[in-house]
Length: 114
Length: 114
Image 1: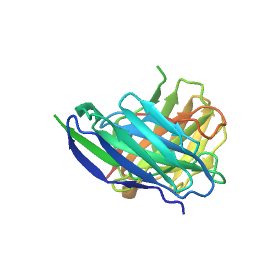
Image 2: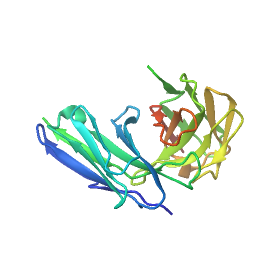
Image 3: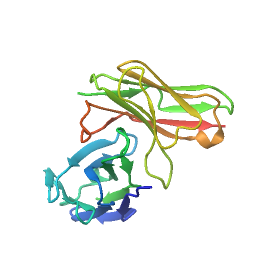
């Protein structure tokens, strides 16, 4: 059974702090790594889909890196704002898995205090 | 703006009732998915569909069935609801056959089975 691990489970930071969290996954048969942001009472929203080792993606103050050889991805938030408070999910797609299945981690819950 | 709409935000049902959760997407997406989210666990795939009238089991299909009679609509059916099916249910859709396409999610249905 494939396991996608996210750490930390939760994080409390002050407004203006920069923060980062980790998604770890089995590196064999890697195809793609997804990051989603899920704000309370809203729909999860895709941030990034990453496929290439060494890939870096950026969206505003949020960026992500990918290391498929060692099996991890980092998500960085620069200058956190209260509106960044959400649960951040990563999900793995492997070769050989069923077409539809992304394996999700349990998420990192970020709280940003004003 | 693309949209995935779930028919109910909150639902309360009795044990043994037949329950229908409806999901509609307006993006002409081929793929549609049903997930459940439980505290302390990652999103788990119940069923998905990659075409009209086509369906495949996910990780936890027991106690559920699905129906996709039209491309835009994907229904999740609890044949005889049980208390262990109390959960947050999320519908999602994605475009085409590429395995790195991001998911678009609905806002979820919180189902309580009493």
